[in-house]
Amino acid sequence: MTMLYVYGIVDSPRFDRTSLKGHDGADVFAVPCGDCAAVASDLSRRTIAPSPRSVWLHEHVLDTLMRRHAVLPLRFATIVPDAGMLRNRLRPMHRALAGDLRRLRGKIEFALRVTNIHAGWLHAGDAERDGAAAQVLPPGTRYLRAKAERWRERTAGEDAARRIERELRRHLDPVAENAVWALATRSATLTASYLVERKEVSAFVAAVVDARACHPALDVSCTGPWAPYSFVTVRPPEAW
Amino acid sequence: MPRPMPSRLATDGETAADDLVRLVLALVETLRQLVERQAIRRVEGGQLADDDVERLGLALLRLEQRMDGLKAHFGLQDDDLSLRLDLGDLADERE
Amino acid sequence: MKVRIGHERNTAIADLLDRALNKGVVLWGEATISLAGVDLVYVGLKVLVSSVETAQRMRSVHASDVALLGRRGA
Image 1 (cartoon, rainbow over the protein chains, first blue to last red):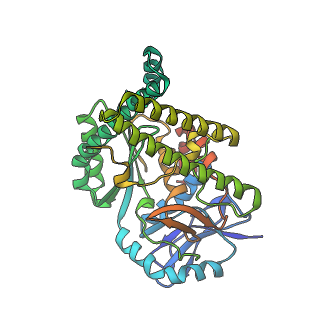
Image 2 (cartoon, rainbow over the protein chains, first blue to last red; image 1 turned 90 degrees about the vertical axis):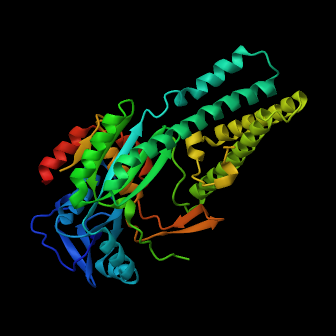
Image 3 (tube, chains in turn red, purple, blue; image 1 turned 90 degrees about the horizontal axis):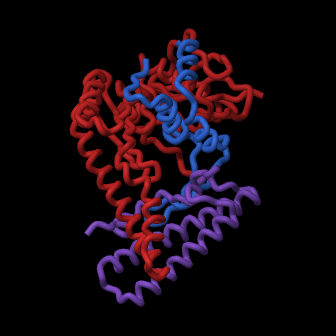
């Protein structure tokens, strides 16, 4: 039983694949579809578990091709029974894929993470316990007061995150094409995905270093370049 | 171990029921939090008499205890019930 | 060659997992039930191994695994 593992879509029906190996050491090859191609390799199993190794390998295949081509990364573990089924699925999506390839040609993604946004935020729960115990209030009122305190803490955290995002954007937006920001309230972590043109990469990295220097109290980390996972817009045809 | 809301509902019997329970409880929990937030705004706005505050607080406290019971019964944690809903104005607390 | 700024050791793998497991092009998609623009229910093909718990375990992996793969693949 051989399946096809699909890594991404490239902007050419064939590519130079000399020594490019994918999962289980299999050769990576092109499955042409009009002007572009799916990037695939044979897989002798039906599923593949995500591990640091397997996910890095997925990314490595895309990275290698990105040196010469526009590449749309597929989500990890897209596995299909055969090339025929793959081509049938790609055909109706062809124009949208070409559009994304055109838009993302020569661009890469950087990941940003900001922690330590609001030190008091994560301890809101403690305040609730301590506050509730100290006051001699009827239970319902005590409950509401503690909850109110908690919401106040959280709002303050979200406000801090908004301020920080604004600050960091001042440094980074001018040297980037696009950006998507998100706040994970539970872990009080701000994350961002930045789309950067290749020729602006050094300027972007310099801007990150600058931003970090301007905000020493923040824990800002940046990794990349990555394939532009966060900036693909093409969607599959709906099943319904 | 807490799992985020599944991106797929299973279509086979057992897990389908589990996923459905999670979805329902997640919705209930989201509503409970909304109601709670509204109540807090009214209390902080000083619009309610002490008796009303106490009654409201007790009702919300019981609701939370009820939810805790349901979560425990189904072996779910807070992280299992988080829905990424963009509620816009509904959730806006800023004056 | 990956840029890594900041001293969080397992940031790179966490950043990659966030992307490769949750983003990127999806070829076999999921039908979505929406209400007022809110996605409520996803029904679709069970193509992927459930990866979320694995992903959460993976976040504690160190960068040394990354370096190992880089040497082999590059």
